[in-house]
Length: 430
Image 1 (tube, rainbow, N blue to C red):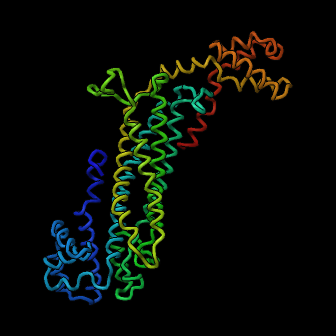
Image 2 (cartoon, one colour; image 1 turned 180 degrees about the vertical axis):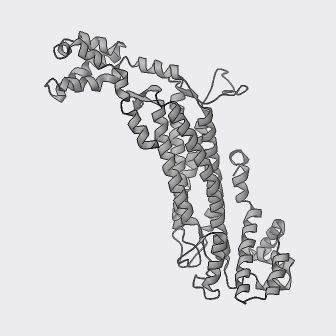
Image 3 (cartoon, one colour; image 1 turned 60 degrees about the vertical axis):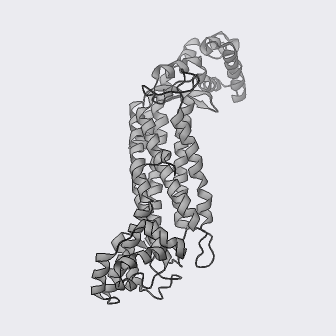
């Protein structure tokens, strides 16, 4: 991943240094378990633990010759351990090490992603509560609909990301598995108790049936979850972008003192962070298909999944972390323009009451079709002429024949639309 979109803590999980450190830990745990069963000498275990170390550059150098990363790693370890290195990697296969390490890297990443997700949920919740009663116009198809509150907009996103936290926690459990089962997963040269020992030490579960690899449906589920998270980040980013538009201006991304919006037009304050997240979401979602295709492997294994995981796994996870962190900063610093929300409500000329008027007319024993036709006629006149909807209703002969003036006035009480807001908040927040 290019430096622009990666953060240090999560990027380091996918560096060679961390990967080989995990590989070595797994190999040492296997040796420990074998020593407990007297399959290797205790004296040899002590030597291995003392001398086992690696050098990333040396591993790369060896791999150029042997064309096999695990063999290159083991060769480098052997150079440092000496004769007792013959007991390392006893009875296991490369995938036992690679897949179990991959599980650990994914777990390490999930912890960071969950922390960022929890922070985002907290920040959205704060906005939902703070702006619970901040009135604004709702829109469907981008067109004025009925009033809502800005807090309620945020509350919906709060619930959405809470669901993602549940999904991510479950996906983490799905990939928290260990496989130390040998060449085709039959434990022919390694006792299942060794796997039990390693899994317990690494706080992983045993894969029930592993063939030579951990089944890739587990990983596909995790990366599908990341794609869903990215889609919700985009959903929120698009809402911010729309509300940031010049003719709307209900919210704005924070614009720092020395920030510049355009090389040509000094007046510009563009929603660049939200736009960036929309693009990043596309990249994260695109990883879904390759991870699903990784499920379909030949027989007990092939390595068609390997290139996908070496490239897309780190990049997708690093991007998702970046996106969550960026959205956190956007929400924390979001500028809320209550005056524009109020102004945009007024721009509707009261048209958001059209459904209320129609329902009231229906109560006067006329058909829904007729009530709709009457209200639509007056509403479209209000829209075309940019005139007050209530005033036009009061002048309309057909409406006047059915509704008294005081009845019309009562239909234009803005608080009517918010009578169940507390119920929704109680349902969402408890």
